[in-house]
Length: 410
Image (tube, rainbow, N blue to C red; front, side):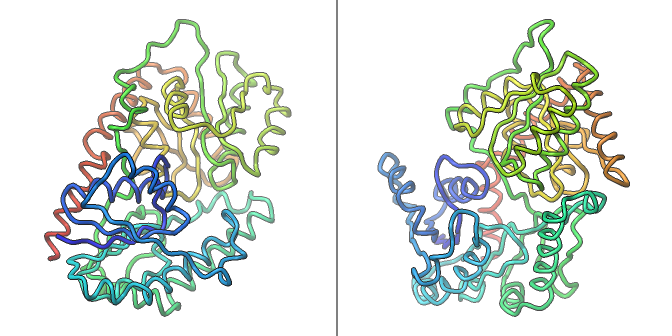
């Protein structure tokens, strides 16, 4: 078959959305002729990678907004508005190309937000939107957030509500898509209208390409040195909704009471100073090591050498880091309220909630200490996490399933 994939985020050697785009289209090109539309600023890294791996079944097309409509975008600043406009412009730029080149499928892949539209669903071939979804903020957290962050979360909620129920281009998207693939958890508030539910089905958003060299080195569980401290790890962009302040509070209170734990922090971000204040407050700064951003191979090694991942994010899709941790035999501590907790709880880690912030912290401390002390349970979760990746979350298997979906709707 001939497939056109819209992958706004698509870059080699990356995780998260860029990794989803890149790994999916490369794997799918083993089964079909794949044309990929992505941002022009991804071109350099893509073409550098393709120099060493020529693939006649994989064709890239690039587009960025005109300079007059992108001067204000810098890094994450304004990226959602940019993405929204990009979806509109690419439709008018590429609709004739798509409609006249005998494509069988048009597939909107990234970003996977179900409140943002994709006008490509109005093209002539069969169309697939997703996996798309969105998680809502865990309610007991809201009142405890700093006013600036609480205001941002309020705006986020209002914008999502507007797009869900009023914004016309999104309605065109869901009405014209032949198939909607959903990755939201049971906790998400938004449900597709009843008259559209027949064409919506649950689907996994994220996978791992375990054939990459950094994964190939992880062949068995590490043997822990006798008497070595239990190593906890925080790894993410150090921003509020990733739960890094909550994770810091959990570790600090535990470390204040015992000397057999240490913490590694990977990443940078606006909450780093607040995290440091917490460690100073509880007098545990000497048990914490900040390492900043690290390369992918170093990240995997750090995950492998750790004993527990602290990841109490409060509105998150299935982060690539979660799968990387599972593959590296690393049990996970998370918060109830999103797809991560659905995937990991009592399988490859533990998830917990609470009626208010204090209860959440106490409950997170309880399950973290449970896994610090229960080595056998950690080992059980470590093995199950690795098994789950092998069985369910490899890109090879996810794309084979998607190829069946393609054939089904054609």
